[in-house]
Image 1 (tube, rainbow, N blue to C red):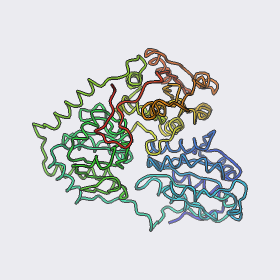
Image 2 (image 1 turned 45 degrees about the horizontal axis):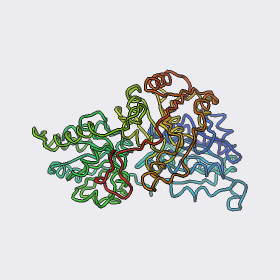
Image 3 (image 1 turned 45 degrees about the vertical axis):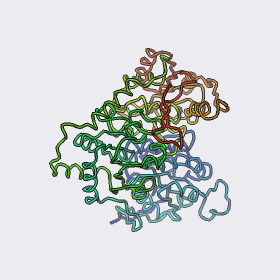
Image 4 (image 1 turned 135 degrees about the vertical axis):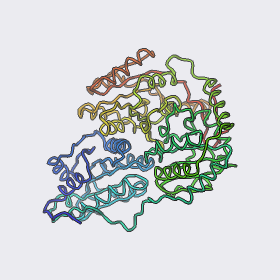
Length: 566
């Protein structure tokens, strides 16, 4: 059923369609090819948040989408405006974040004629979007918006592109707004696979050394309570991928933390001993499991995922449970209750797991300095309210956060884990704050990554979106430097950032607050100051440039070959 026809131009049809999808704000930058839609945006109730670069608009929409579980919306003009969105779109695709990107395009009759600021953004974006639409008439706009939001947030979430020619925005037509859309070629998986859940339970209960591996899909489906109930009922230890960090409370007795390249020593050690893994919403990426062949040796895998394309892609699976993770875990819980399952009084496996965990948490050697990565991140955890939302940039600081910043409140930790996009964290934190203005939002950053989108300070200040930047400053591209020290015989090139700029002065020049913390006491005061501030706060924290991220599983090696601090 459709609403009554109205005569309006395409730009107005777009705004009305967005309002019907519940959109309250868009992140964007105007230009020649999207000015008609901006003129209608001016007349609408949708808030516009002005960015200083289109890539930041995409990252803000991404951060908003991950936190709200609803598609974030970003606007850009044609040509370089639209191509500037691509890194952000690809980042959202790699991490399954819902997004709708709306770009302007040259008029229909000019497409394919090398018009000024023309780009084939449909062709360029196709590999990294769930779908891309380009309407040729205003009448099509309400339907493609409806379809775009439906595709972006159903099944495995991801980005959708709407590329709207300028004349389509300007021209008037009789417009109707569909209440629902039919897409015969799109079938997001929704049914629960009861038969294979039964098989999964039998395999878990017959194993001697089971473990749960929770990935990002657990967070996307908000299956926190179900995951915890399953783990506690079966008394099975839980590890996570880095993207799954925050799916299970890291202060829980059954938690071992993240596995993988920069996973916890105890998690990687135990992972090499298990005989059965219940893998929930994970891709088994090389960063998480090391070499594929070694990981699956003598291991029975139950793979639960909403995306059937992930089943068997990287690991051989004994039982595949395709469907929504939350719904599947709920059915598993009901089946376990029906079986009247009882916990074992003598769980030798769990006792061994706890012994390994206790050993490594007591004996892992850490950097001795007062302002070591471990100490500053543990101080952050001590001071920051547990419900705060945390994003990270990409680099050493990101991996230190994996190791030393425990996530207590489910679904409050977000990072660019798939594409590994430097510059993601700060604009994503702004988007997250828009989604959740009621909680503190903090970005754990390194200066190399922060440099890439630091101009978003203008957006955070002028649009009154206060966040905290926890800047771990080692005056270098730290992860590159670590690899050069480790794998290239200390041939150091292209990594020295020379403490430029002064981040306190930089923050102040934008009207934000800048603080330098050179002791743990100063750091605690700075965090508390940032939490009470009504403007964005950048906390510059100098650390030892020679400090490495350890433990470390080198590329192309197995979890058994983990490099430990000497």
